[in-house]
Amino acid sequence: MATGRDEGLDVKIGLEVHVQLTALKTKLFCGCSANYRGMPPNTLTCPICLGHPGTLPVLNRKAVEHAMMVALALNSSISRQMIFFRKNYFYVDLPKNFQISQYDKAGGVPLSTGGWVEFAVNGEKKKVRIRRIQLEEDPARLTYPGTITTSSYTLVDFNRAGVALLEIVTEPDMETPEEAYFFLQKLRSIVEHLGVSSENMQGSMRCDANISIKGGARVEIKNISSFRDVRRALQYEIIRQKQLLRRGGAAKQETRHWDEDRQITVSLRVKETESDYRYFPEPDLVPVKISEEWISEVASKMPELPDDRRERFTSDYGIPEYDATVLTSNKKIADFFEECCKLYPNPKKVANWIMSDLLRNINETGIDVAEMSITAEQFIDLLKMIDEELISGKIAKRVLREAIRTGRSPRKVVEDEGLLKISDEKMIAKIVDEVFHEFEGAVADAKRDRKAVNFLVGQVMRKTRGRADPEITNKVILSKLEEK
Amino acid sequence: MITKEVVEHVAWLARIKLSEEEKEKFARQLSKILEYFNMISNVDTSNVEPTFHVVELHNVFRDDEEKESLPQEVVLKSARESEDGFVKAPRIL
Ligand SMILES: [Zn+2]
Image (cartoon, rainbow over all chains, first blue to last red; front, side):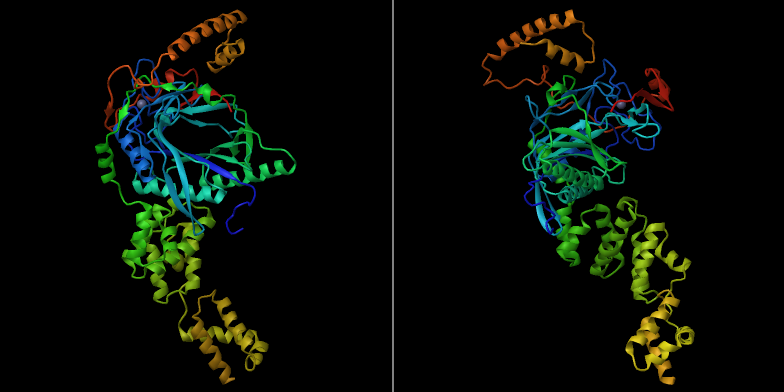
């Protein structure tokens, strides 16, 4: 199971990722604010994004530039002339009954084609090819009073309608759900480093997946809203299709819906096929010519990307490549690491604590990195408390877990729970006396048996909840045994 | 040739209801239109740049600057039903 691959199953996974260009102030084709989160419904719309007759969309130049940055970062070749297409279908989230999108067939030219993303999966390098990247508008946001399965009607908020969206389509190059997960993590880190999309915004990155097993039919899974669920949905789908094969059947080509509540995929009756979308060139928008100069201008403004940052981390901070890869897989963590290094002289120690304790606790508590409240100052304060021997390393781990879980600062956790290390010899001696009194048998044994000494040390630790300095405790116990 | 079944499918995509006579009529008419397109397809265009737009314009942009949006009550006026500021729509899944 080292590779996580199902040998002989020939699993092929492709992803279709939608990335909202959240750094833009306005929508793709109108001046309505794109900052719809937390706004009352239907307060950020205009005749253009509501698709009223007689209105004309006008393209947001910055949206094209942000899209170009993503294309460049993914090694995708930018089209010299791109055009927009109408994708026609009726759905309540679509005010115009068509979505302005792009198309790579019927003469359509998307923003860019080709490219690749390289990332690490459990220390192994993996490369996934990009098929195309296109610019399109986000549909409206739908909510269902009660739950999605029981609600009898739909509520529509058009604030999101028309927000700039990138669709990134990969080739079916992934072989395990883990690879899909790490691909998405790398992609997110790239768009965050570019500053075009922010992670701490719910729904800013959404994903559809397609999967085939043993050369069988391609099954599409829609409606996956988190990376964790991409992994789960794919794992579920592999098991489902394996069972079908075992029973002598085969997966049929279909679209399935990821049911987040039940954590399963369910068949979705989709009557439309691609030709039913009746794609045709958007007559209300003129072609966009992208010159070599424009591309170089955008390229010259590109910020540092995760791969460059990883290299810099190994050279500037002297940390191993593996550490640098983990730290740069998330922009917030990479920023956090650098801030910590400004406050603390030992980058390797900072890296270790971030990777083994901070990230592990964040994963375990199910908190998103974006929601992490601990600051670099607080984190370094914790490391300094260990250095100053105010707390033990073991206690520090506990403190950090508690700090992450409750949002309190580590120092506050130490104070609130009285976790300062006890190094006062007199105080320890008092506790040792108590222990000696309680475990007379062990004291008698301890004169001959080293194991019984350890038992007594353990009892002191138990009484002090791990706060007693182990060395002093040991010393005090041994000298008291001598006196006996 | 456009069959009656194709007309029915296209009508469903457009969410319109057609009578039996209309289906027959549209099948005939659409077939004729397609025949005409086939004629155009026969023209050799191998040396012609595709036309994406009838006007010779490109790169019409706007800056990323915010404009005022419509007030909610105005927007909701064009909805048949609304609830708590949302447009109310039938449930489709
Ligand atoms: Zn608008």
